[in-house]
Image (cartoon, rainbow, N blue to C red):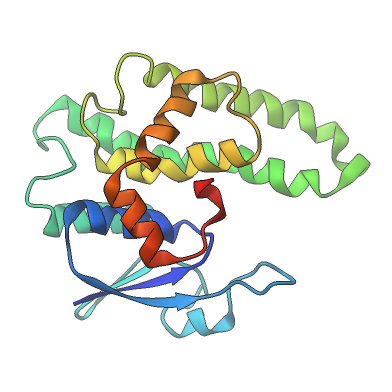
Length: 208
């Protein structure tokens, strides 16, 4: 059985959701953030030298990085579900979203979080951060203007990988200007598999 090394309030929640959507059996090894530093505990380094989550164990294979895990699970265990036919143009779009989540969209959200803690010292950076947030969140909102999910009428691994972007943006109060993005977050958070993953994973502040 596959094992997910799961950290509370982290990107690993979307891996639990993916496993529930696919109906795959798995077990959890749960870790808690340090209440003072909010960092992952050092025990995670026993399975991932970087000390980060998520980590997937599938027999002898150990896979890190959310996008790689999403790709691995769907490619090896999805039986054609949650991704387009690899010979189609839709598949290229799907892969683009898998990379966009961490390659572009996450950076301004993280900068917004950390620079916000600097108070007045961070003020000169805020206009550029806000500009980048508007760029990326607007791009995502436009992509969702014509369909309920990123690739059309059906959920895919692209939505699962991108979900953390929508949730963090919501937690930072950034969705008021992006109704399509806000509706997408509500839509996927209402899915039964998403709710089941919350029951399995425990504390997850971004589901509110």
